[in-house]
Length: 285
Image (tube, rainbow, N blue to C red; front, side, top):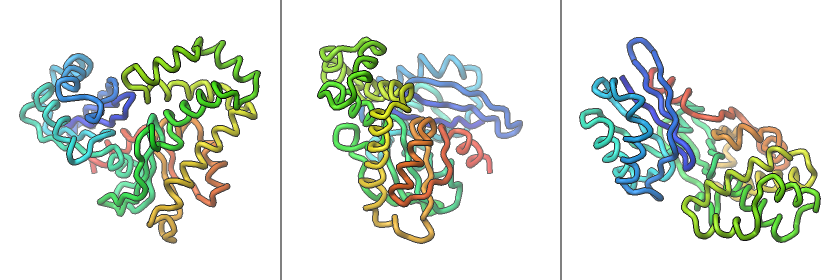
């Protein structure tokens, strides 16, 4: 039995896979990120949200593959310790970055440029085995262009600074029930402001055909390509002309992402909402 996880800042998709029967059991918990949560916090999430669903099978878990946002070499041990303490003290545990998970899911053992567009954003070149970093993502304050948090940040900034058409500004306040005061409170004084900002991207999806919102989305995705892909040292290699995407933002905004890519001279490849299916296939072959 193996347990596979793909974790972003907002949610974690888990799948228990029986390697003998190919039987699968899927679970969803809140996001786990060792940059924002300590070992005790992560243990609490695992014990309360994951363990009850897999309790009777934990003794059979031989290997745990955890791919997550914030799982750098310096931080991955925090997640590994939490998994060992809360789920299985005997299983072999591998904690890797969400970027490697995305690459393995869409490329397998093939080369490619792989990007994540979810709550946050990231990009890399994958040589079929290892990742080669390009432009740093820098997180939702300094970077994360094209992500849900970036779209939400651009949206509320443009709303509050009267940069969007008046009709869409009125709809925003009516539909979200937000005010300038509540937005400031949630962004600057509440935990996980990136999750809050990313949640506001749903407003953009509902009104994606409105000229102001359409223009905002195209600019957000163009900024991702201009600031993260085009300047990367590996971006102009003839063998790497196709860019693959993983994440809910890439998946639900495929039309706008494709339009922005064309203006930047970039060809899109595979786009999947979640890498979990590809990761299951990767670890079963």
